[in-house]
Length: 249
Length: 158
Image 1 (cartoon, rainbow over the protein chains, first blue to last red):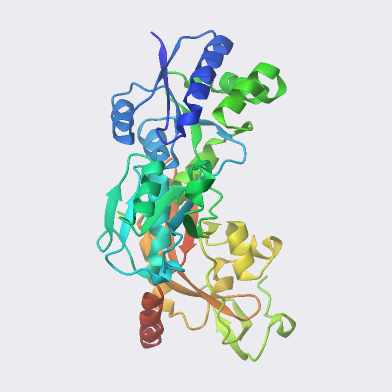
Image 2 (cartoon, each protein chain N blue to C red):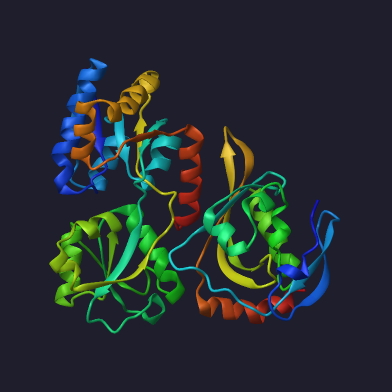
């Protein structure tokens, strides 16, 4: 039976093909059948994890706690210099100059991207804003978050910084950044489940070698990743501890 | 060994006092009225071992505390304690995290240069294989309104 590999649903659409190529690359290198499955949203992906269908995952940091501490996944690697940072953005014409200018009743556009939403909400705390006193519109993509701001139907929007930079310059020119997170520790991680865990070292060596051979470099480029760094189990445990200080009960 | 604060490090007017700590240690501290604003978008992160000795600090911690990494790692975490913080707050913190729960609160921290900064802190135990290996504290930018409430409340808790 083939193993299953999945990727956190929050990556940019331009990289779908890249992840598929990566899966093919891994299958060849490991001489193992690996089925690449993409889920439409985090809820569907979590259900698959809960049902023990997933063996290898490029996981959102928000889900790392569940994967490691409840499902026994272990750390393999993290992408080089690719931390998840969130930004809060307003329409360029907005009178809001800082987070502290925002008032209860603020209309917020966000996505189901859990770590970005969490970081965004933390950056609203200095204005005494929380889920109970803002109006949240959950959008299916960052493009739709931008649309809410441009149409004036929302006051602020949360973006993954990388996704914001991927918007066209024309769209970005109509918006303004209020604050950018500089957390540096929170990032997506590649984790392997119990069924494949015995091949963790082999997997890491394959990832590590990607930067030194032409085909591997091409695959990395198509995923928008510079390379992989080894992730020790304590590194991911520390990130999970850090996340647990940020997640509200 | 915990060093006394040095007047050469301190900017502006300051008050000198002797700070006593729970473990019997004491040191001379120099406290000014200068507040350093919390940096936007940052998290200040540190970890300690199970006895409260600093084992890890991130760059934001270094930047805001005014100490170098070498001056922090190996020191008790109370090196940041400001005399305006009531001891009851820290007792509550330790009682909470040692019971395996998460502690959250507003804290006024003392910098190397005698100035201070307010944070909203969350502290948890680092549990590995069922054992407490240490503690991690993550601070974020506090609500000014809540800080003002603490400025009024904390003097009543001594």
